[in-house]
Image (cartoon, rainbow, N blue to C red):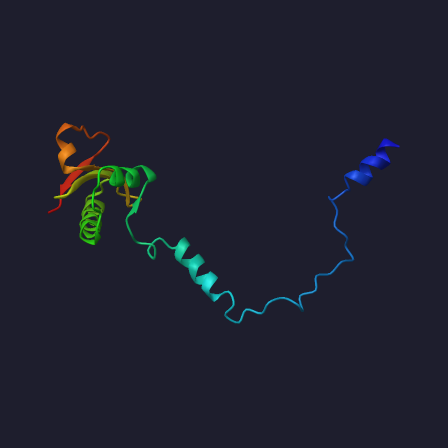
Amino acid sequence: MSKSINNLLIPNVTRTPSDKKVDSSNALQNKGANTEFSELLKAKSNPAVNEGVSLTSHAAKRLEERNIDFDGKEYMKIKEAISKLQQKGSKDSLVITDKAAYVIDVNKEKIVTAVDKMSMNENVFTKIDSTVFMN
C-alpha cells in the first residue's frame, strides 16, 4: 500500500511519453522580436564591446566616504592609465591623479579602492606591481 501512495505523491518523472509531439505552429517567429536581446547578449559576451572602467563595491564606498569627485575627466585619466599599464603587462597598479590615488585591477579594468589626496601621506599601498602618475 505504501508503494501506491508513493507513486501517487511522487510520480515517476524519469521517462517522457514517446507519443507526445511539440506543436511549434504557435511559436514566436524571429522577426526582430529577439533582436534587442540578441544584441545585448552579444555585447555581454564580447569584452571588446563592454570597454569601461568599473568599481568594486568597496571602491564605490571609499569614493563616497572620502568625497572624491570621480567625474568624466578623472574617468578618462584612469582609462588612459589602464591602457598604458596593459601595454606594460601590469596586473595590480596604483594610479595617482591630482585628486586621489586608486588601486586598480588592470586585467579587469576595475578600481579596487580609492584614497583622497589628504589621506595618501599615511597610507601604505600593498600588492601592487606598478605605479603611474596621471596629471
